[in-house]
Image 1 (cartoon, rainbow, N blue to C red):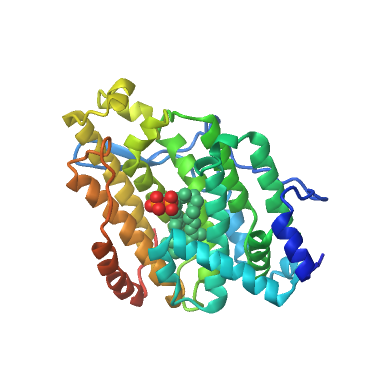
Image 2: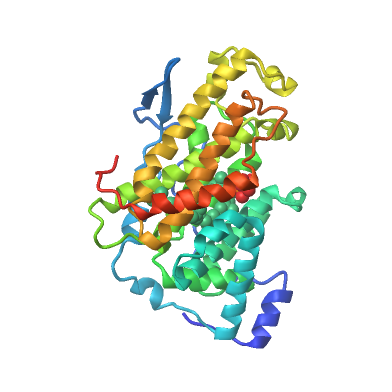
Length: 383
Ligand SMILES: CC(C)=CCC/C(C)=C/CC/C(C)=C/CC/C(C)=C/[C@@H]1[C@@H](COP(=O)(O)OP(=O)(O)O)[C@]1(C)CC/C=C(\C)CC/C=C(\C)CCC=C(C)C
């Protein structure tokens, strides 16, 4: 299917806020839902205190291998045959808007994208904007209007994007992107599923449930990014391990995000921490809601920080396997987010009343450091 967007269509897309759904094949995530119990062996890492489970959902349960296969296809005629034909000026403006949103909301990351090729930059900006808009549905100023039908409609729009029938200008940029790069729809759909989970759930029984949530809302970003960032032909490691690393970077980022925002989340009645582990440390929900930093809390946090660092370490090797022009933003994101964990330690583990942050100067100093890291290509076998 192809479609041409004229200036009139452009205006229509901008102004028409209730576009029809059109024909589409309903996409449904095939991965397990949070409530499902999955019998897979739990991997553990030893910490100073005790063993810590690090992964209790296997990537095959999340169907990652199938996504990798589809995204590493050498030819992707299945997409190019449906490539929408947009008016070039319209498309240029669409990408320009994505670029502006990205530079406004994610300054450091935006800076990191500047070394990438033009095509890749545009694609990452378009993906970024779609992810941000998805997140805003549940976390943004209009979150009060959130309902399952809003997410259903967003999912229909996702299908339309992949079918070359975008609803608005920003969707059109992504529609072009998914036809320029071998991007599979599943990680996008899984992110929407993560937003659904967020609206239903305010407690997480164990790390398995947290891991699933982190996969949905952030691991998916890693999976979306790899086909755009590219794996160079000289890479000797299996694509699957690079995708695993990308997913782990998302998990590490999201775990860090959660640890940074514990206090803020309690104000919304939410605790994104494993209840069984809180219990093991003798911490009750009331303790969390009273926002008092006790020694028990500090010990608990040390463990959680160790686990988040584990994921960043797992991601490092993969970051060095990406195309060299794409490594800088990845290293910046990795180093910057990991630094937030140090900031929580510097606050003596008070993430209940304080928000750990990395100052502007530190952020700026990190950019050349990340650049240096991005110059080296790893020779190590992964994972
Ligand atoms: C290079 C790079 C970082 C590319 C990713 C660009 C991209 C498409 C980002 C989208 C991020 C986004 C808006 C996700 C929506 C869900 C969400 C809010 C997730 C949290 C992000 C940060 O949120 P926020 O902006 O609110 O944070 P602050 O409050 O401003 O601190 C997350 C924590 C998830 C972020 C996850 C990633 C960026 C995944 C990174 C993984 C890769 C780019 C793969 C790299 C490949 C290898 C092989 C390691």
